[in-house]
Image 1 (cartoon, rainbow, N blue to C red):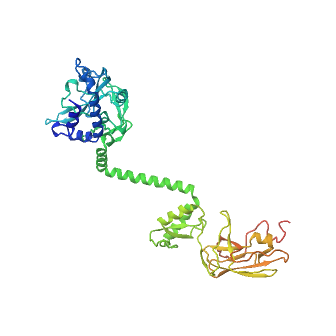
Image 2 (cartoon, one colour):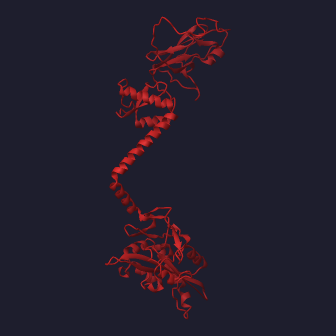
Length: 468
C-alpha cells in the first residue's frame, strides 16, 4: 500500500473508518501530506532490497503470548511496530502504529477494531525524532495477525498532545511519554460512563488517576454532579446554609478584631436607623435608593454620608481606609478669589489666599478672601496666623485664632496686625497666602447644674498653683 493510496483513503467513505477517527485525522491533514512526501522520497530504499520481504514486526518488548492472557485492550490503546534496514543510499526505518477503538455488537458484547498507521523516515534526525515521540504501549490484546489490510497512513503526531502513562508487556508502569502539541496530535481516552472515545483534554485532571485524567469526561462529570445534588438536595442545602453561617460568623469575628472602631461605628448607624433616630437617604451622587452609610471619621459615628455601593467602592479606591479627607463645599465670591490648597502632602492646615491688594504698616487691616464655606456638621474651622508672617514680618491675626462655626454662611474675613514698624511688611498682593486654617471635630455639651462637684487634687488653686 503506497503512501498516496493511504492518504486518499482518508477521505473515502469506502475505507470503513469511523467518523470519530476521520475527524481527528482531518485535523492533522498538513502533517499527513508531509508524511506521504517523506514516503515518496525513501521508497527507493525499500526497493533496493528485493531479497528481503518488508513485513511489520513487533518491537523486542512485545510478547503476543503474554498479551493474549491479559484483559481486553483499552479503547484508546495503541502499539508501535518498527522495522529498520539499510541500502546503498543510507539507513531507513519503518513504523506501524495500531489504534484500537471499541464498540458493542448486537449481543451487547464489546468488540475492538484495530487501525494501522504506517510511517517511514530516512534521515538520522527524522529517525531520532520518531523514536522519541512514539508512544510505546504494549497493553493491547491484539497481535500482528489481527492487522487489517485496509490500513491508513497517519503521522506519529496523531497519537498525542498530552502526557500518557505507558505500560510494558507485563502490565507494569514503565515510562511517561509526552508528545509536543506543536505536532497537532490527539490522544484519545475512553469515558467509563458514556463509553465514547474523546480527546484527553475533555477530561478533568486527576492526580490519583494513572494517566493524570479522570475516568469520566467533563460532560459526564458535570451531569453526575448535578444528578447527585438533586438526589440529596435537602442535605446539600442544609450544608450550604451551615457553611455560609460559619463563614459569616468567622468573617465578623476577624473584622471586629481588626477594625474595632469601624465596626462600632457601623453598629451605631445600624441601631440608629433601626430605632428611627437616623434616616437612610439616597446616594448623594446618583440618587440611588440602595445606599450605605459612609464615615469620613469613625470618631463621629452618626456623621455619615449616604453613597450607593458603586460610589462607595470608588471613594475608598481613591482615598483608602481610615480617617479620610473631608469634603467641604465652597463658593468663590470674588473674581480674584482662590481655592484653598495644601502646601505639601503632610500639611496639617490649608492656606487661605488674599483676593485684593492691601497695604499694612503698624495698624490692623481687614482682608477679603472671597471665600464662603459650608463647613460640615460636627466640625469647626480654626484660622491661624502663618508662621512666615510672624517670624519675618511680626504680623499676626488680630484675634489670635479665628473660630468659624458650621452654620456660618458669610465670607471669611482675615484681620491682620503688624506689631513692629521696623519689620518688613508681608506680601498682601492678590493670590498671596494670608492665613492658614484647619477643620476640627467638635462636640456640643449639655450642662447639668449641681450643688456639689467631685473633688480633685488641685482643687481651687489658680494661677501659679501648679508651679512656675
